[in-house]
Length: 288
Length: 284
Image (cartoon, rainbow over all chains, first blue to last red; front, side):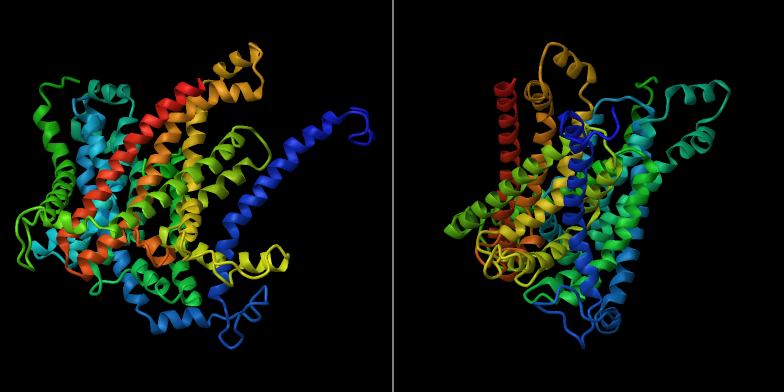
């Protein structure tokens, strides 16, 4: 390339190249950044509005910033018990899902057998079934067994929706263990239990972590089941948020509760994404 | 290895997970079907028969169905139309691709209710979108973009949430197309458009079909986002089902609507598989 040649006068190719490699990607990134970033930034801004200096129409930015809304939400609404319920419920559902899914995942990884594909489809069904249908009619079943409006009922329901994530991540992890490794261990005289402890579990550990994170988040975000089976006795962060978004939108408080729900999800899911280095998380989390 | 000897072992290991899911889903399905024909009821006197089906077959149910199907189709195909170019673009290598990948992943990780609020907040009457448009002089006064009769607000939220999902599926599908195939087509004189038209497009249709089906089913049965940002009338199918059961105690009719949601989900999934096959045949 001859230096100092004004771009575009004699050879249009470099300009086109520059446009293709620099300007177009930049434009796409900026558009995507605005579409994704502005809604989140607006929520942050609204959660910091100072009630003494209301933010309204002609102002582009809040005139004054304060933590009053956060303090108000924590003091006045039922968010504190809701956060506790959400996290205890998610932990219980994650542990139960893990205990239920582990033996299945082990069998799926260890042996080839008929009906495997069928099991895989069955385990995904709770995600594809319309959430409100499951919620309403499961609540009818629960009512018949005295489980409606109970914490146990909520744990069982959340486990049902968390299991697909746990089952999928655990069984893909077990299936990814190379046959040779476990055969070699057997040849060297390792018992099945020794193999489980020294080979399988260390190898599937990332899968367990990611599965636990996904199950935990799925439970944390769950709305329909909690709304039908739990409210009004048990409130979680999503049901509180739903209350703020109803007939009258309380923007400031809804912003605070949204961020309380959003930030842990984002952090944990990006962590899980890193941990697996594959698109398990994104595809897994989006019902695939 | 030897699978005969392990049959019992496998069955026992698989039982907790399979049993749990099968039991709960079967309970839900049996409960729904029985209630729709008046076989199971603890609250009121009902007679066995198709009364609930007759009662539920109203213009209102039809309004809810066509509204939900319209929103689902718009959201699913709208996401697809936006996600496809994005996925094609992500095939190239350019500076900042990891950044773009991270950005489009964010909505995927945003809880549905939070996504609904985020979009509601920017699209509302005095939201930033309306303010910017008014300031730029594009529109004279703010537009009603949420709770509108058409359901535009719901579609915005669904597309924001589901576009990354479709982009991700399509990226994965496109990445699985062997590079040799593209190279061969180019060697035979195909330009970028011909490669797209005859290689990439037909091979990516199964992925697009899966994505569209999942988004469609999700939106068809949606309750929360319609309750937050949807029109006053018609209610979505799920809202209608909820109101019938919970507010009016008409569990029989609610069960009928539930069956309508599930059966139409299956029918639409089937329709999309036919559509996918036809499209492959046409574009190949």
